[in-house]
Length: 141
Image 1 (cartoon, rainbow, N blue to C red):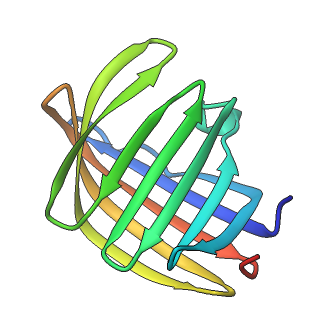
Image 2 (image 1 turned 30 degrees about the vertical axis):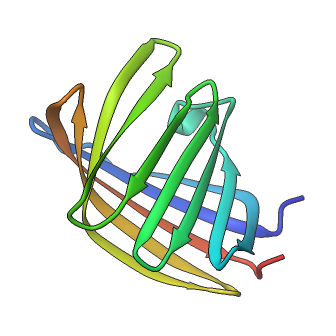
């Protein structure tokens, strides 16, 4: 059952262009587990990932993003540390490397905001820099 209003603002800055930011506002779940905050929501047509559930686990120095469904991936964000993962999409699988350049975390038991600016590699080639800002309104369950 949803207990939070979640706003996800993402922007991709490829080597060739800066895309317009995309914002998804949706209901979702917000809770605390093993000392970390967890945010869960369903993707939509707006993000191009209908049928996918995204989960963020937010810790003081690390954010983990897991996607399950039509798009499947597991990404770990830590400042100045590159992590590799496999992204499985309906169009095929690829290796994705992410390295957080900047991270902010202002999460509390009544919601809050976290953000990540990160460099992206696709199949070991630099693809650009992305940013994501997640705002949660609601108390942990």
